[in-house]
Length: 601
Ligand code: C2E
Ligand code: CA
Ligand code: CA
Image (tube, rainbow, N blue to C red):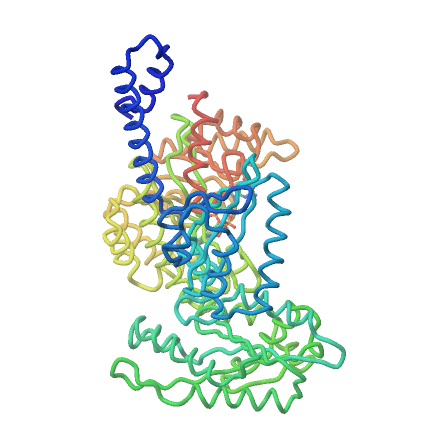
């Protein structure tokens, strides 16, 4: 506050011995004091009535001392009930009548109970709060602060919006934003609760529903129409179930319905048929007539399993058994019906749709320059977040992706994503991407790489591609040709896993690689590890003569780190430096690497 308040000045002056003043001066002083007091009152009133919160103050006899405008408005009090001296009972009685529209012995009894409680709490001398829901739909948080003389101050905060936001957040956490039905987390919670709540002789059924060929709708008409179709499907499903049943979207084009009640198998089947019939009527979406069907796997609890996991697994088996036969329809789980479907086959089916369901992600592992002790590149390593099996690593699913050919599309995605990620890193960092044989054989690898770079806006010099030594054995002609094209683009090419397969020098010479990555088997210290060190040293020396750099991978210990540094390798990678991490954690890992290794530079 800029200037000293007038009432302060007045009180200082009042401290002067006033009997030294003559009558005229005394009268002046009194007038000035009165003015200051009036001024103070005005300020006080302005402040009070400009508060967003309601405020009132009562004395020990429960009579109103003062209240502000917000208080009057929040409780819609008439003018006469806001005058100093008004008994609390009058105010509350008015309020109760206004809120409930009632007046009678019942209300009076409630009111006197409230008053007794209120007095007891005040007597404890601590502040306390209460939530009040008003008829107008507003919610107030009222805080009472007892005063030393037996009175109190209460403050009303309108928390309606805050409550609504909280409810919205709560809703979003439990629902699927697209269709408005429950999401998979809420489903899981509800399913577990429902299972726990099953009494003796009671049962429920779970219908796991998957749209047939939904991907085709997306591919043909585009995502906006695919989304609109999912919304329409959810609406029809909701209309086909009872109020006591529960509908959720598990993700993508998968829905689940919990059918509550004593469910016999014929009842399950009736609902399944009803669901299928309602889904398969044609849809009119933005001018397109679309038809789609659904397949369902059904389990009954407790008959087909006691835990949510067991039941979900069995519902999935039933669903898979419908789908794998290329049939459409529904199937009630039968013990043993999944036995002929081995895990491998199911993964094989799942990997076909994993990309369109956004189940892949890239983790990155830093590669440290042994010359500068800075991270010079990060290798993109693919991870599959499988909806039921959790995180799966490449050795488990790459063979399937190769076998089914899915690797071509997956590899294209990896290139695109890695280039996009790298644009957010420091300019001196490159990104390293692994390639599969099938990507070379599919024909257009060069243009795929070119497109990934130009879409992301990444200079070719910031991309390095790794080709496993073993691949060179399997393809010589075409691969060499493509590698040359890629080299001309300006991307780096590394021979990966050198020494794991043949380790023959011919592979080093088969193409002018920029780098050789020495396989961790060669690096690993084995009994008599001195030989290994000698081999690594020889490879590093040879690579240098051929004008190539060397990366030692799989470095797990300080000893190994020192060995490969002494052997003359240019770069090192491995758990000793950092494990592969999700892209979101990379910044932190890079800072930590900088701290840990910079002293050695
Ligand atoms: P890679 O190219 O030899 O990648 C290095 C592998 O070694 C990674 O396994 C990595 O997690 C692991 N590793 C790193 N440091 C250490 C260490 O200090 N000790 C040990 N024991 N292991 C370490 P990951 O991620 O399971 O990948 C396995 C292989 O899958 C990769 O071997 C690569 O050939 C292939 N791969 C990964 N991502 C892709 C991809 O996007 N496309 C293709 N085509 N292949 C990929
Ligand atoms: Ca690699
Ligand atoms: Ca490797």
